[in-house]
Picture 1: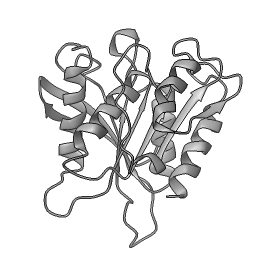
Picture 2: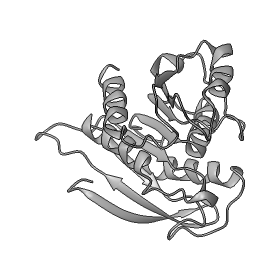
Picture 3: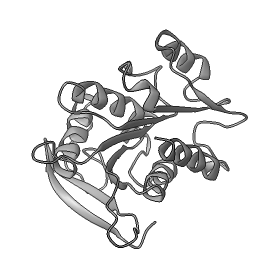
Length: 216
């Protein structure tokens, strides 16, 4: 993805976790805007940090000056452990946040993003971190609201949250996402004619996310 991509292994709650860190190419003297931790689709259905939508999210963050951190949940790729129905995967995400964007000292801005099951995990991470540190922005794509308890978005984070969904998503129905978003008056950006994996529309998705990040 990027000439400054590096793989790493860190200690997670149930073993080592495999990470891929993408650094933006910045002009001399300019610092990254922050760290974006991006979570992938369901581990039992082929989800990994190499998923095309996850890569697209990372590209959008790198394009707008963020360091993007993707990682494999426990039991995926070189990450150790076994699938834990979302509970352990949330702990994996929080461990990556603690390692890559620690809150002690002078913390860097933190962003969270996720696709499908990963959007569920990102929402839960945002909720859990709310009392500990600010989340600069949140991007949720193809949010798996029908199968998992996607957390509501805190009122102060909603203006900095982007929810994107495909009109013809056959895995997570748009109507279910609207039912989750409606009580929060949380806008949902709908891409007409697009299904769950955004086939043929990944450049459009990247542009939507990049514009959202540039506007903040």
